[in-house]
Amino acid sequence: MAREKWGTKLGFMLAAMGSAVGLGNIWRFSFVAGNNGGGAFLILYLLFVLIIGVPLLLTEVSIGRKAESDVVGSFKKLAPGTPWYLTGFFGIASAFLILSFYAVVAGWAMFYFWNYLNGSFFAQPAAGYEGAFGQFISHTWHPIAWTAFFMILTIVIVLSGVKKGIELANKIFMPMLALILIVLAFFSLSLDGASEGLKFLFTPDWTALSNPSIYIAALGQAFFSLSLGMGAMLTYGSYLKKENKLPSATLGIGLMDTFFAVISGIVIFPAVFAFGIDPSSGPPLVFITLPSIFEQMPLGGMVGLIFFFALILASLSSSVSILEVPTAYFMRVFGWSRFATSTVMGSIMFVMGIAVSLGFGVWSGVTPIGERNILDSMDYIASNILLPLGGLSMALLVGWYFKKSEALEATDLTSSPIGSTWFTIVKWVAPILIIMIFLNKIGII
Ligand code: PFF
Image (cartoon, rainbow, N blue to C red):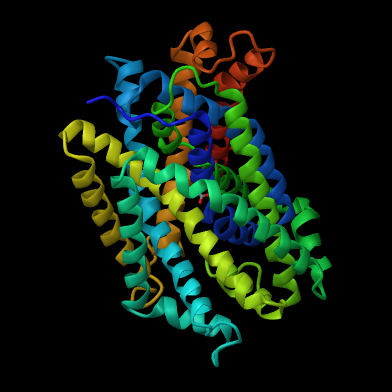
């Protein structure tokens, strides 16, 4: 059977942007920035996106396009007879870890959408937004039902195939989400006490840089937000036709993704300070902050309704790219249909998601890594360790295993003035930085 292809280059761009823009930009960016002191984190994150993220995004997509296979198969094809393909399993493992908590958080967003639809979040519930949210996520099966709902939607899009399912949803709702965020940013800036939030986000406290955790947090956020290192972008690249040019496409994806993150910060932090919310509240942060913003806003209930609808779609266009990674792999090795493969993989992730959800309720005492609950532990392993390792492997493949001319050809940079700079980054700068950040975290440097 011929492999599927994108309808147009725009189709690929939209799908890749859809993968990049999601809960990572709004939910994860805000709480990780909040946990890591704001300004200094933002600068590190932007630096890593620019000098590691975008060059590796180009690398990852080009590997997929050249090999025309999934994350494991691509390494096998391009570095035959070597154990390189084993690093593809970092990608498969991170897909399972990430989607199982991603679906839980997207389920929370669906619950909010529902509460705006029936009007119950138009005004503070008796317990307050924070209390109502706390009650909801600690409930044994309510949030799990929403997780199931989200996972079913993801599976249905993936099983209906690459083109039909994924291209369309992104064309309408990405611009809509951007528009709402811009309006929200202006509103948030008009709140009393907003300036303190801006100071938090944009005035770096350099002493934060003495904590090794901030580097790995910023690196993990850059990888997570750009959908980098898992093979999602690689797999999407494998559905590209050869004639599509890559460098401008990947730069566009990087810029768009960063725009969404920064604008989310401008929405969240002024409001966090205006409403006296703790910026280091962790994963619940945006779910506590946003409804307070909507409540204060004229027509806020309507805005909240549209916002959560757009956020759910942004999450779906990311979750499908995650599910596509193991689906593409297992379809090839087991020869199963797309239908069977995506259903089985999605179901396994859902079962893992049950544990994640219970981690906010009856299993809140379960802390696999340090003081982290189940979600935070899975996120830590996947985003801060496995994704950067996957990216490192891709950089080493293209920087060291390929000849320079081959690497430039794979990325359409042969006659480009930035070709050599890109190659130096992929061969030296990005790998050294990633390794240094790991060593620094372990305490070796
Ligand atoms: N980039 C997505 C987001 O920011 O929500 C999440 C994600 C998608 C992470 C795909 C990793 C991935 F491979």
